[in-house]
Image (cartoon, rainbow, N blue to C red):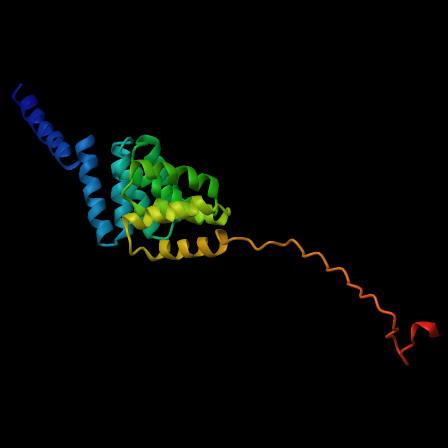
Length: 213
């Protein structure tokens, strides 16, 4: 009996040690998320990706961790994986406006303007203090030839961030290229020749009097 107890206690200590070194659940996911944020701040993208991936493995509903994973992928130049991570963040947390904005921006850069517009418009509702969604919507509407739509979006971006150079330039381009009044192409009718009655022929050669015609 004593031997059985001696074997049982080390087993308990081993299990306790495993639980300490390998935490599970939302708390552990948060720990890995914080490590990912720290690595991201230091621009250590590979390490950040590892931590964020572990966070979402432990908590598949962790929208912020998916968003951080997208940032890390984007920082390392893997935009396709970044977009997938942003979309995963939106799937589990649709109200995460910064993920909507980032997805819209990447769709814009991929020239997928319909998808970009949808995500950017949602972002303007969820994160109205972010000027970037307004700016990218202005760009889309300018390229579509929509004067009022593009000008309104640029002005909203500048109302939030008055020194946003991209929005300033976009507004100037829209006003110059899209909103300028079109010149009329109606042609002026040719004037009809006028005639003056006279009894003296003034054609070539000597002028003739009327009795010489």
